[in-house]
Image (cartoon, rainbow, N blue to C red; front, side):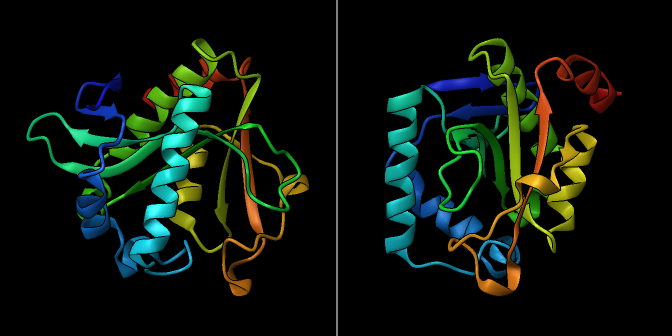
Length: 190
């Protein structure tokens, strides 16, 4: 049974159900979506990721939740919070905001809407001192959202990751502190 973690004007962020895996793979395990994430992945890879997502929810009370459009119940992808656990990361355990949406949901403000709600939760409910976001240099779209959220590039936190192909390394880091979020949130919504 799924539970709603966050609702926004247009979206519902909710826990995963095992049936979500097929729809998630269908819509997000595509070349365009996975381009900067190491390419299209196997079902075994996604099942392992699903296990980690469920574990984050159990252990921390947050995860990368399913993003559903309220108007029609369409599964758009995921967004939410987890803890940094990438091997080589200099900041294990930090709050991390992340998103992955299907291609036909791009450019409509869904990722920004879900990320703002996730950051609100990180700071207001979980008391995060700061939140990071990870991407690769080539993923200009993700970096664009990080900048619109007024996150700051933290070159001092970049790291080499075995989770991405060598040609995409290093993983780059953006961050925002709890004290910065109210003004950043207002600017992102303007």
